[in-house]
Image 1 (spheres, rainbow, N blue to C red):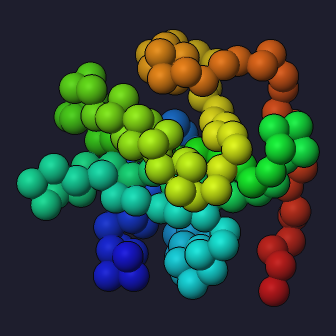
Image 2 (image 1 turned 90 degrees about the vertical axis):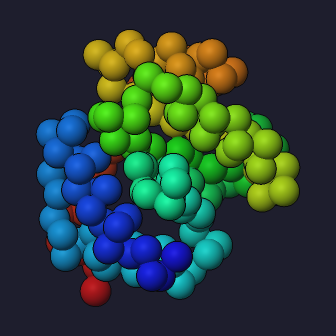
Amino acid sequence: MPDDRNTVLDLMARFCQHFSYPFNELVRQRAVSEFLVNTHLGSIWLIDIDNQAIGYVALTYGFTFEFGGRDAFVDEFYVTPDHRNRGIGKQVLAAIQQKANSLGLFALHLQTEFYNDRAQKLYETAGFVDLHRNTLTWQVTTLPQ
């Protein structure tokens, strides 16, 4: 995966642009580097067709008492616009769900924008359930050293 770092960063920039999320390249480079050398933090996979990267999915690992152990958050999931609506997202989710047991996961979580009905339908079709909870976030204003 280290050889694919630039590809991942390019796709991350496109992901952020698509959703109008801020993208700080230096922060992302640092985060990807840390993520790749600390495999206990999670997993990241490129999605490719015919050796062409058309997206990525990143899982970040945590722990949940509610569900009984190690869990993962689908932190980012992106498929390029010209490859959407072809069942690729459904295949990727199914692959992650099949791999969950070998990763020692008890639960998978994800978020979607409230206006993204298409993604919501995909996730629900894949068996994800809306627990009707809000995600609240506090962000550090100065980056850790």
